[in-house]
Length: 213
Image (cartoon, rainbow, N blue to C red; front, side):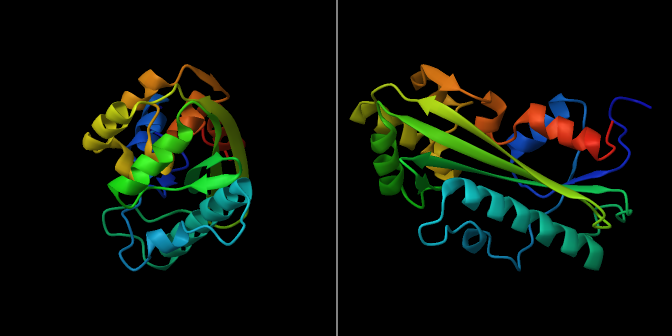
């Protein structure tokens, strides 16, 4: 068996290039499920009133996993192989929380600016939930990894420059630690890859328990 041959297959219910790359760096080549145009991704990721951040990421990750499993069972996309009972579906969700307040993806530059100003000089939490199941539903599991992230004080000029790069616009909390924002983060406590969107240690342990070697 070569490094990139995996049994069972791993279907990745995420369009995030970061999650795909993290798995590939570990020698796993996931089969990325194309986005379902009939599903409103924004609605799925909308927090419920007064929802706890950890409960939120668990709910969303499980929902993404279950929707992907159902889609693969009913009518798998033509570019993917036919799923087998032992194949796996992996979904994940990441949120940023400041004082238990969920900071999602900004819908415009003003929202991004507001979030970054709130994070400036403060410590916040990043929660990532990873949800895995077998295609036949015989087993499923979910893990949550939480990390503390401290931002240095951010000047208005830096925030404006960062927003102008476009990097904050598709990321929870309006930043990505693997990008330019990483230069303004002097301290983290937890999982660096979890902050990126997929905690590798916990994810790989889960996959091994599901039979992926």
